Length: 274
Image (cartoon, rainbow, N blue to C red; front, side, top):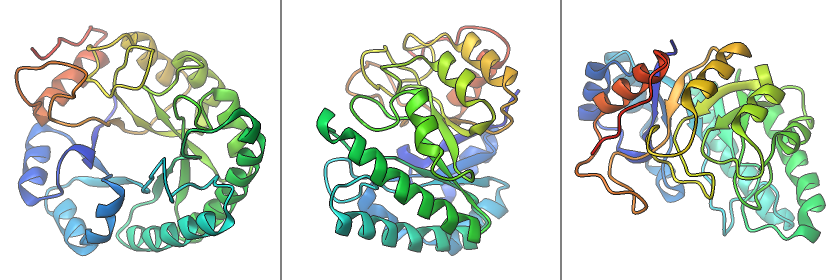
């Protein structure tokens, strides 16, 4: 069984939530929030809370803004440079409080077919630079698989992107692959996967549903990760509130995620939250 983690994309980093995480048995978090909220993070306070409640600061999701200025594959050099400058500041601050994994989107979207090769070239150049920057701070860059026309929407394209630098690793998002399968992705990326974003979907678009609410075969996916030797955190990336694409009668709790994970770890189909 894996340790259970949560992305903070669906809740604020308050002491109340650190208490609830600890009480539920969740032992790790990824700092993740809207692009315009990162500047407000009190890194000293977050570190103190993590130590007080024994919640590991597992990873940090660098901000992305798919339709605007934060895109490491942008055809505009000034925008790429600005993204690197912004990421440099965050990596330095987060590494200073012990975070050593940084999640990066290899592109924004949409990407026209005639631009794809050039965008791949620029993304690889930027990822190479970020990999060396992170390494100087005792950390690694984990490139995330993405949906639709984004770069990294197949195992082969992720392999190509991370070939830019042998220090690059992978964040496996279980609800992003639309032009590939999760099992093929796990098989091809193997030990390059150092962290996860766990959620369910219907194979037609990303949904960020709770496992059991979509079409993923969770027993097969869990077994595949174990078989390639994945030893990181089983880290959920979805909000507590019901999404617009799915009806639930209530908000999720941290206990719901622990129950969901334990069902998967024990080879059972997770029960849906009504």
